[in-house]
Image: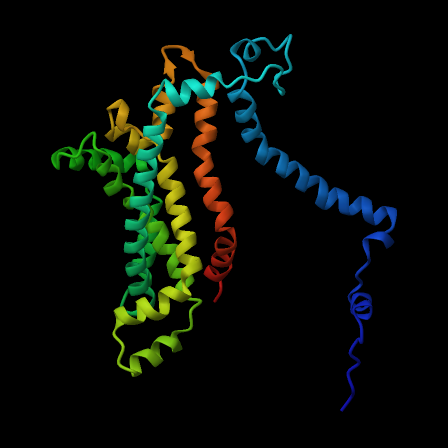
Length: 304
């Protein structure tokens, strides 16, 4: 048997794979790395963060700076002011809109994720005839445009007496949240070894006990990822909120800042940008707190 030479140090491993230290890279290698990695990455970050920067500077700009680009730099604030934020928070119902949006998003997220867990587990683990076709049909239901569904849903909401009631949004949002969350959880449940559940079945555990004590604890990253997606889609939803809610004090943030801060042909750009910026903070905080679980769920969902 031929002995295999194993490198004894990190330097030998790096040499074996052709790794070069940054300080030893030639000028051509550094230029190539800058062109292929750092410059595209910098452009991506710039494009990604520029809308937030534009909202932030517009929110603290006085009106005369917004319309006089000849005198003032449009990409900078010369005389910052909190007038726009004051108008948004104390002269409108924005705090109430924010609380209503938060309540609707949280309630619809829990309702949708709970239903999706049961649906995804049944399709992936019970292995009944046609399970794969059912999973595909559920995902295709997510692809149906909301502009087609909101008309029949509006008829049902009116018949049930829920028109102009935030409960109508909690009940209609799962129509597009459940299909997507189910599809996501089906992929994640595939990464959990089925042998664990077989052992529990042999010990006499029921399906609900297995789901509660074995599957769900192992699927926490997938549940968090599905919850983040559901919360984000609920928070940003516009068509249903515009069609089902008419009262000013019951509107959600995406609809309210567009319908209540625009009077005729006058746009209150400072208040609009402040409302958009504050409205994006909860979603950004959720992503920042659960980003590790989100990434792990994405890698687990595609594992075969």
